[in-house]
Amino acid sequence: MREDLVSTDVVAWNEDNMRGGFVASNVGMMLDSAPTSVDAQAAGLEAGTNFSIVPMPTSRSGETDDGTLVSPARTFFVTADAVERGAKDEAGQVLRLLMQQDVAFELMLAGSDPHRTDAVLANPEMVDQWLPIWNEDNIAAFSNQGMFPVDLDFPQAEDVMERFNEFVVSNPDMDPMAIAEEWQPQFDAIRG
Image 1 (cartoon, rainbow, N blue to C red):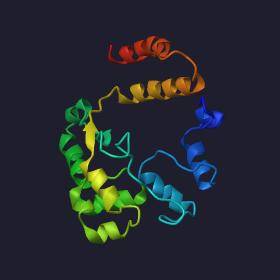
Image 2 (image 1 turned 30 degrees about the vertical axis):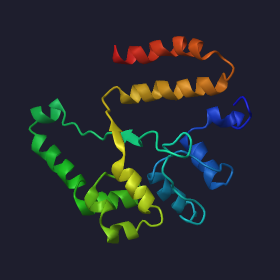
Image 3 (image 1 turned 180 degrees about the vertical axis):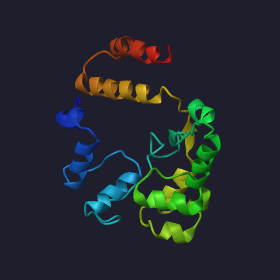
């Protein structure tokens, strides 16, 4: 922001604005996930020609891998209410259905977050239907990524993080320690 490398409008963007700007070629790059490629193709962009998905770099210097790609762990919960109503088995059947190879693949093609299902990613016939999006680099990055734990507080933390990012971008000259002192209590409050 200090060097005018980012539009001053960026803090007002929601996902729709960002994706719309990308499709209209007003945005050269966006950080998003594989399901967005389905939206991009539906908007008339051709994967490999008008856009490409590339793994996030894990190197700060370009010479070595300094970190690990991560994503939130997808965790399924069977609620106490489901147990009380005798629906625990039905909930388990739904989860098993979602993890079946053909179902997981159809959900990926429909634009859902891809499952880390090796049976899908290792199946050449399935991968061929999603080329060039699922090229070897993307499959390797997705299959080998690390996970960070998610719990019921995650949506609230994500909300604070989004507002925090907006604040930081809007105040590029503010002292980082002052920003930390102002925002840390909001993060602390989430965990109680």
